[in-house]
Image: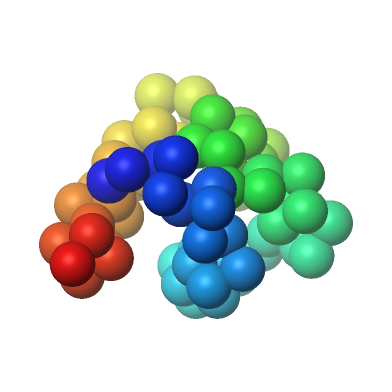
Length: 71
């Protein structure tokens, strides 16, 4: 998944992020602003999981949505 492209199209993609991680708030979404590392950190924080687990979940989501998003 091309995160530079995600940053540029964040408004379009953040609905998909909220579908996956409903505990993220609007304020979280503003802080994330399409940046992968910020998203991983907020997932870790909101779901009370380790960094490694947050990265694993994010990578899985990237694979699932990446094919549809990159086309």
